[in-house]
Image (cartoon, rainbow, N blue to C red; front, side, top):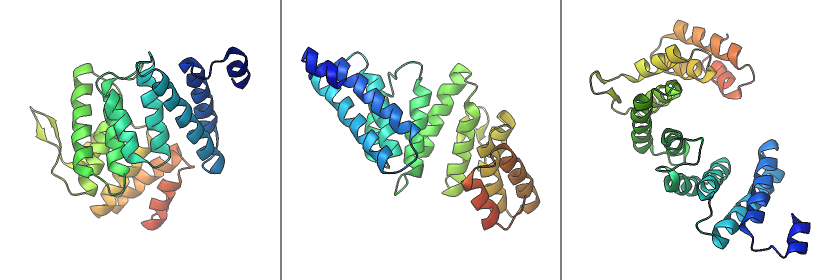
Length: 231
């Protein structure tokens, strides 16, 4: 890319900076968290920003905003990530759909410091409505996060269907597990909820499944030892 810019005089070519940004972003995603990854993501951000400065209506602007949002999310810059996602939530880059972007918005609001659980809940409820309209098979993860957000922050139960009314958080987590029993996080968050309900035997069973599906999950093992439950 440096040779191309030198010989072609293409320093203001948005396609050049787009390629450089993708290269750095891809390399950073392959690196473990640390200084090298941060440098790659910073270089990717600078290159992708250069694209939008050179060509504000660049044909892949939505993809650039999505990639910058992911970079900011990885680098613990939630406000910048939210701005990027909100800019594309109505017209996301293929193959993403509106539900995918709104799920990311909810995820950022849930995990940022300080957290915004009410907004996260609203985002997840919107995702659920979009997925129900399109019969999206990934709906299990939305029930999981809705249930967990409402349980953790003691929010009112979510409205998952006008016909059925509110669904208790633990029921959301159980429904997520029924929808996708091969997702370790479904087992893990249901286990944490069951522990809070003093249902230790059921929680133990969930943790057995969670560690079997994802034995390398430090988060799950932390729950195991914090609760004194040996799978």
